[in-house]
Image (cartoon, rainbow, N blue to C red; front, side, top):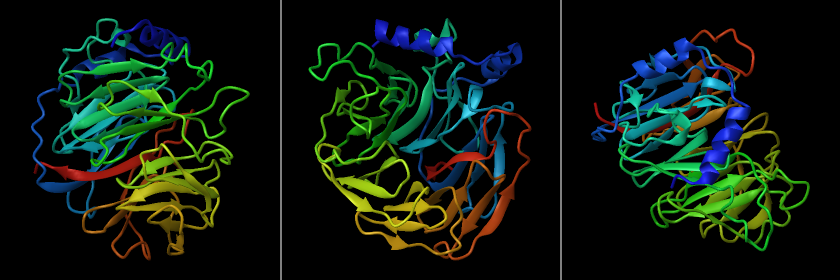
Length: 373
């Protein structure tokens, strides 16, 4: 869908755009086009990403790592801002760029990276450059589909970059009885194969309205979206993090002191459920929700929380199919590994942070999935 709402979102993004140099453009053009991925899940891989389009990979259960891609130093805003990594069906995808030209990098072996798009979709953001995608804050993968979410915009592909569908929220709910929609960044999650739903949480940009933000749902793999009216979130004290383990959705408040849970893909919620911690980062570790911080806690259902080992580091955590844990953080220049459930940790990779202002230069996200050898 290439509507006027998408074009409007594009021009708003451009109004706050970061500068892009000729060398940035050349780097983008030098990356090969994709769209011809051949997923073959054979071996597990960890993929960690950070600003500068930094991609670091391990294919031996986190024991050894290699930086396989890096473009140029990048801050929170700019052509190489990198905040997220998604996985589905044997392919990883990484959105790169915020407030400037955005591209999606992808790989079916976690080592060789190219544009996700094959170049057939000419989206309005590119101004003729078929590699440029709509501005993307985060990305979710599920059922062979990637859904990128950014500034009031969703971008989806269900054929690994051969075609794309774009849905802009501006103007979609003009006649909604709730009045004008006021939101900003939206972040999507996949609710699992049982429902096949993608759910997205947007912040609340108005002076009034729901404190937790706004929930949007897609039941057609990201093509169209509904603005939900969920029940049970009235006591929420502010927008936090939203994750799903395929059965249960967990949403925290801003400080992660409390959690709300849903077992019907976001329609109804229970809570608040005290987490027993504060100012912690939530990750999905296997089927459990982990909050890592000064006091680290974990829960299988978002309601009953248990203590994690005292040695748990701060940051984003993910587990392989063997239970090996990997942790990264945007303030650290290393990757940590644990083979005993988080009781002890070993530094398995370190790198030199870029000397650039505008955001911490550590690693922003880490994911695990099966890829070709």
